[in-house]
Image (cartoon, rainbow, N blue to C red; front, side):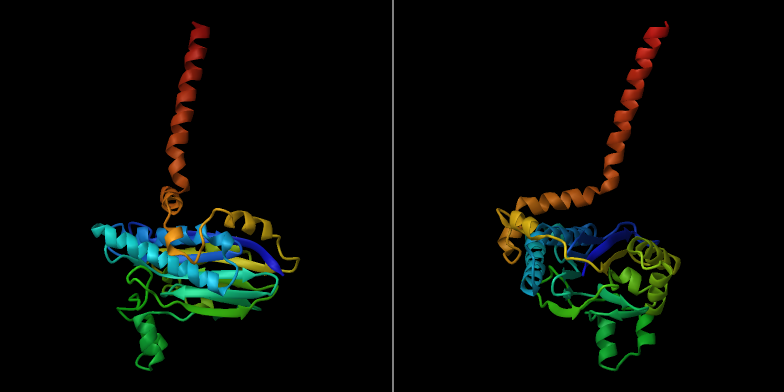
Length: 307
């Protein structure tokens, strides 16, 4: 078994002015982060988490490593919050998935209400437990699932990265098999689209991760788009595991130890946050300017020849 196609997609939604979600799609490691906080704080928290996770992705190989990188991201966000009053109290969810192709196991580390699902044979199974107020009320029997779906405080989470010096990280390891799809998502999807519809849309996409991600984000917006929505989908297929040992060895040489918070707070992580913040679209203005200058130069040469 090995990882096949993978896709990540994020959208601001229809009610928010900025996107506070971030994701990592770097096989065999995948992650979702949904930021919270005033002004730019939520966006910064999620991007710090994603950058720290991505920075250490090549060196993570087991449950201890996955938990270590989540705790390192927590320390990074908390430290930044202490030194910058403008973002004090910021936090983010984090759901991280690591695939071991050789043992056919999926390891999850999870804080908050961003979810992980496994889609198998037409059935969708939630693999994570929401750390949210309404989820706690449902588990205690004080709310029904239907009541929780429309509860005014359904977005209130009870655990997050960055709000405390230490964080409790839930972990789970499950078997995966060829034919499975794994879906990670922020609550911008799960709060807008029912699980049975998520399963239907994945099936209708012919299990194509790219088509499924687009269909799920579109459905969330069609249902109101109350929040940012982010989806990561990847498939598991038959075949020999990909050769990643060389890459991991190279990445470990001189790179941060994912379990060491002091290492992942290096400037390389902060530089990565800046690149994430710029996004793909930020290159277009510069490109258009270059094309405009070339066009002007070409016109000047042509004009000098025809005069």
